[in-house]
Image (cartoon, rainbow, N blue to C red; front, top):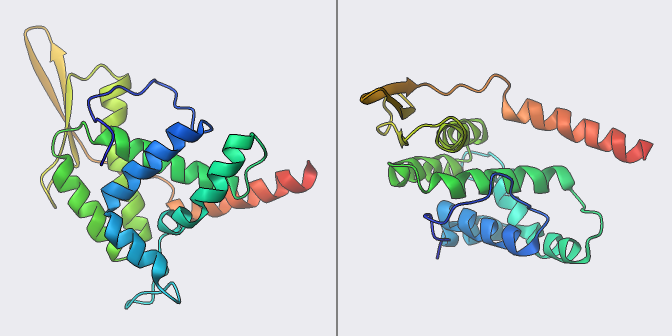
Amino acid sequence: MMSDPGSPFPSGVNVADPEVFQRLARDLRDTLGDEWVREELAAVDGSGPNGAPVLDIVRAFERLPAWREVLEKGTSVPDSELLFRFAMVAHILSRAQTVDGFEGFRDELRSLARARAAERFYDKVFEAEVAVYFSDNMGAEWARFGQKAGRPDVWVGFPVLHSQLLLPTECKRINPQAEHNRDIDSLSGQLEDDL
């Protein structure tokens, strides 16, 4: 069962808190589909019919027990860049549950995860990030995901005088996630060596 979408998250989420981390991981598993996540993790060779590897976010579920243990002990986290990426995606999607149209958005996200379309999956997560950002930080009264396979990606409503300003928002990532992740992984390795 997902966390109560109506309960507000603080503006900063402490993912180093084992309970918060577990709740976010549970929400992410529910969003992607618990049974499907189990099936993906059980895949022997990790590749699907299209030859694409399992999404890194899905494979990260295998690390949850080890991550929880080090978070509880307060020791250094192995694969910290993956933990951070996992926690951010989980937090964004957990917050996005409160955005109108989440069910259709979730269905599209699940389809991309099942197709192992990593770039398009992270593009979709970015749409949720934009919707959550407008809702939480920009004073929007509401945000709504656009129609399935339609335009815009996100609608946002702002109060203006005695009416609403409707802002159609197309969400495009500047830097592809895989390229960005390689840069982070490379930097993380260099920092570990230097420290």
